[in-house]
Image 1: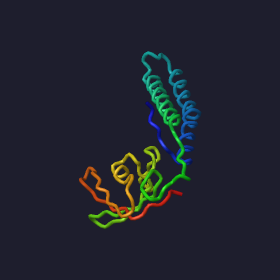
Image 2: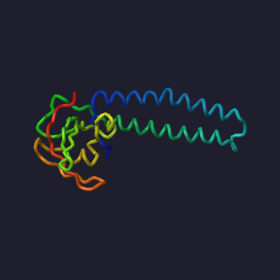
Image 3: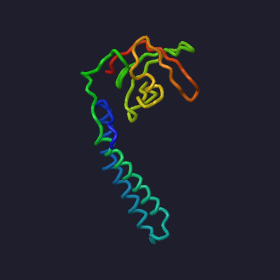
Length: 159
């Protein structure tokens, strides 16, 4: 059974654009590499040709994977958003109970996760640990460094 993934409208559009680029520009570039390698003579001993064909196979595999993801992608209905507990697209302000540091994260799908912009995956240990929590509750989350405790300070809607 295929895994359904939820995306923002922007996230889904980025995936569609990436797929389009791979199908057009990416395929054209690889075809040019194959043609160039083919022009160099005997294909049975042509390492450049073999490498270009391998790259073509990997590229087509990535296209197939992206098509599968898109076929099972759903846009999140933001009108049904509930701020009372942490869910996908929640902006969660949390406080590390050990060192008092406060940070805010937006919970997104795995493909949209980008830690630099404060977006963490709902499949990550912290994302999983925060799902369903309410303001004032503490999430005990097992991370590679050990057990961490985060207090949920605020939950708002991603905009």
